[in-house]
Length: 138
Image 1 (cartoon, helix red, strand yellow):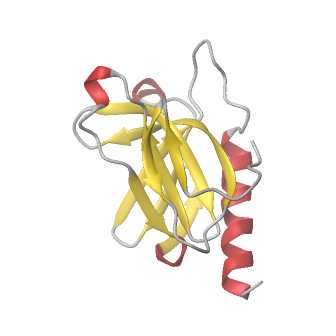
Image 2 (cartoon, one colour):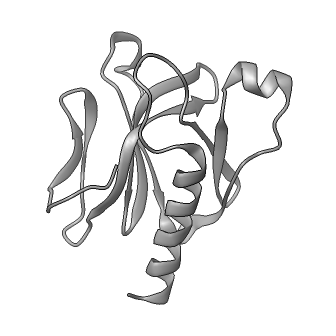
């Protein structure tokens, strides 16, 4: 979903609140799943700004201790779909990744009763476009 207007933060109410920088604006946002190293995947909301990709976890009880993840656009080296297998789809269906140096962040547009409006391929294309715009200085 495309974001509108100037904000001081992302998240809030259902998702953990993350302050935005003074010249930062949200370009894309939607619910998505994020794969945590130990606890599996968690529901949250992904915000792509003109400076960062920010995943904010939802506030449900087991997730209140999980911190938001922020990835600077300058650190992102690749955004793509990892080769899928039967077991990878069991662990996290429709997953895609953002590589930032040695760290790989896995996301999924997921499944369930509340489908996301931005699908995997749209996230990948959208983030690449934002990075291209950011790197060109416009």
